[in-house]
Amino acid sequence: MHSGLRRSTARPRPLAAALTALLACVASLRLPAAPATADVEPWWRHAVIYEIYPRSFQDSNGDGTGDLSGITQRLDYLQELGVDAIWIAPFYPSPQVDFGYDVSDYQAVDPLYGTLADFDRLADQARQRHIRVILDMVLNHTSDQHPWFVDAARARDSRHHDFYVWSDGRLDAAGHPQPPNNWVSLFGGSAWEFVPAVRRFYYHRFYRQQPDLNWRNPEVEQAMFAAMRYWLDRGVAGFRLDAITELFEDAQLRDAPVLGGVNAFGDPNLSDIYTKNLPEVHDVMRRLRAMTDTYPGERVLIGETYVAKTSDLDAWYGGARHNELHLPMDTLVGLGNRLDASTFRQRLLESQTELHHSQPLLVFDNHDNVRSWDRFGDGVHDAQIARIVAALLLTARDAALIYQGQEIGQRTATPARIEDVRDPIGVRGWPRAKGRDGERTPLPWDASNAQAGFSSNPHTWLPVTADYRTINVQSEAADPGSLLNWYRRLIALRRSNRALQNGRMVMLDPTNASVLSYARVSGDGKAVIVSLNMSPLPQSVSLGLAQAGVRGSHLATLLSSPERLPAGPASGPQTLPAYAAWVAELR
Image (cartoon, rainbow, N blue to C red; front, side, top):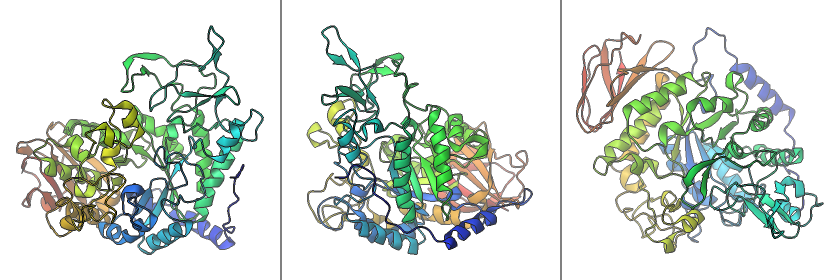
């Protein structure tokens, strides 16, 4: 065990790299009157980013758990899908209490997932396929087995004691130490844990095995930035920043206002005004952005940003200065539960008008939420609705995030018995909170064995979905009408069509409560029209193109589902079948 930081073994970047960075900056300059074009915009503005949960993507060594070499084996699939980058959930050394989000060493690979050489091979093979690699970086907390915390919990005067958030607490009437305030963990119970060796409490926003780092200590920032530079020097394209809104806590440790009622764990519902989105975090984000921008190749910072309203995201971009995160996640559009055209229209309008022209990153699925197939589906038209979700995600003005399995319609497989639950959230919160196992089951590749081609081991870390014989990559790749091939066609169209890459977004037929329609209009006036019928009945759509300032006389279908819609004049009403998705070019 070590008590401090490892030094990066990567060589300093040569002068040539610095010149490359300078040239890249010069190349990115645009005259104010020049139209935006795909060849000058940063790659991430219109990227399709694919999240990989490594435990569940592909097992290469037969131990029942996915690994880095498994990802390498499947890069051809990702290239064929058309993704620009992969975001890999944590694979650092970890006790795996929170399946990798409790990090014990930020500059190595957990043997469960392979070796550093395996990572370098993965990154090299991805680069050859023009796929960038983005890492998950956990800045809010470490594992309680990280050498920093082991040292911090040893004595109050230890080297790393102030790396974490400590309090002496309060004494009850009997003289016993009690937590300093009423804060509760997001994963249940008090957010404070007593350590007898130092007779103090440490704060943990998540599990008690995940002590929060003290970002008011400059040494913490130096240490964490050094860990990020280690991976940037290895060529990663950037980071997805886990729980970044939680980085600071109220310095006075004031009691949180009580909101009433209890949560799934039986704890009181509390306001998070003292534990989330504190202003100090933006100073850190600006310094982190400045550090990241010293690297060539347009490295990207993505934020896990759950906020109350769209305008709250603006600060995470840095407002008009655009000097913080490149892509804070907009979870308000896609992580809801209602397939409602008016709601989507309002959220999309907000993302276009309230963020100082920043590019939204839309998210419909990730490893922490019930899959969109189940959230938006009605049990009858699920396949058609999944195509609507895909069309919205991949034709809106956004960077798009896809979570593994989303593209084949993988279902949520929530355990039916507490005995089968692996996620500690489900173990503690059952049955009100059943945990996140359901959205983390292995990706079904084929029907070659009972493990759906994910592993040769019959005892996979989570069971594969029961419908793997029909819902798998191989079967859908062979079916021209599958959801997978719908995703492939949408991504290919997005890549090839200038209006879908960087055109402005114009809402059409804005009072239609059943159909969401919009135009994507490029700088040279070419337009793509998207209409999504979110109802179980056929709907007539009056696009009103002239009133919206969109010019053209004829509509030619590019993609449609569930059936190919005919071309026709742009001026008349369009009739869409139930749950139809229509993408047409305006000529």
